[in-house]
Length: 211
Image 1 (cartoon, rainbow, N blue to C red):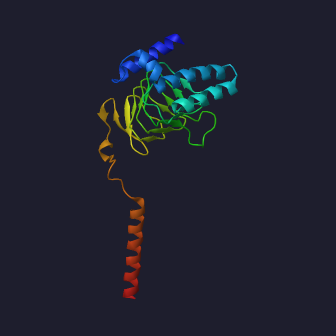
Image 2: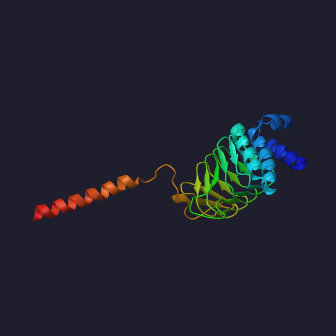
Image 3: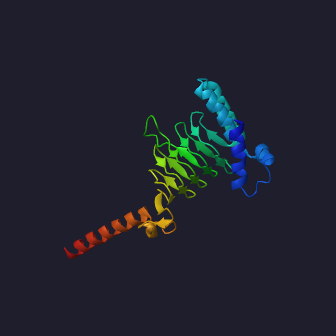
């Protein structure tokens, strides 16, 4: 446990330019407290003391704003930056050296049984507000953009953006359809449908006038 804590504090210090000392991180960073509490809750869960495990996790949620199910599997040196509003589901798995920003959800879709939540590989970054939903894998060294909604597997060394998320880079190279991804000029399906109905009405009026 002490080794895990030391590694976590070092990871925070390396990733957060605002962190001035490991003591400050240990005492004041809610993400660190959430990880420590999860390690405790996970130990109780694995030793079949599930009520105590849930009590610890819910207490931690109240104090840190981070909800991690005690059954979730978390690797080493996880950094939760800011932390508020993060949800990590029961069957979620997180590899080593991952970074999660505020508002991230590692959740399910409600359609799956058994393994319901995602698996993050090593060195994965998930941007603020992103939702990763379902029992698939996000490959090592991948990046999920802020507010993306990921519903299918992401290969290693990839960057995914959008709703639903699409891979726009692999190993630093643009994929073929990257230029098609437009986060601003999104088509309006309602407007498109109204335009189609308007054309139908005009065609009917034209036929009536000819008759």
